[in-house]
Image (cartoon, rainbow, N blue to C red; front, top):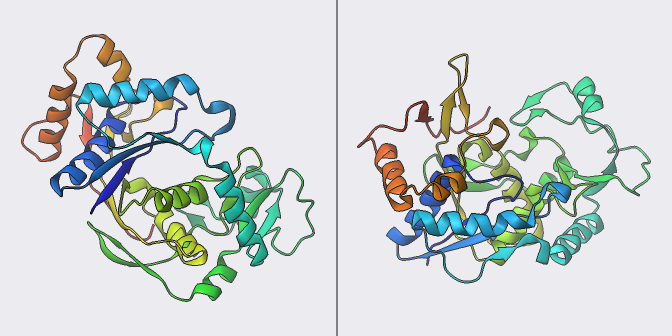
Length: 290
């Protein structure tokens, strides 16, 4: 049975981009007789707002998206993240790092999907682990697993290339786990068989496939869909984002807008049967190496 999930972070209200992501996950599950789950990724330190989780559920219900089973919160799974990090440390695949973003940018010699690629500065250094971040030795990890593949429903089979992102952080100094570690563990714990998310996270799946191999986790299929984008003041298209004050679903809901009608309008626009709201478009699901 197919199992999908929608997993927002409560560090700002949901907007149309989140609505579209939720609709994709929901509709793929329903079309194939599967289950649609909701997970709240609430371990982002002081940025996580407990009050927003209830808002998110109200927004989804307003859109007409019904989920199956209880809502899971990452904050209830901290022990599993610590245990997985401990296993990777025991394999000799994690090392502490205290480099700042400025130091990484200055030392980097390659640009990856998420910006400057960490050059492994602390991999061979003696670093005090107290209060440090912990990075994955990607080269050592790939040597342990050998070649790996994963499948995206839209882009087809992919050779895993976690090296494109360098030695990513798995345990943040300000959080018990990074997105890479927490999402990979949670998808396995929740029995997710189809990971749906935006094409901007395509490269992250290379790392997640590596973690699945290292930790003996089941391997899902992925579906990286296109992103809703908006035109900025200069006429350039940018992903809808909380930080740019995209209109929230909660504001639309409280104003009395018809949620199911909005969801159907997004479906129709994505299928090319109707136009998107003014100033908004759907960027193609472009995939592959950066």
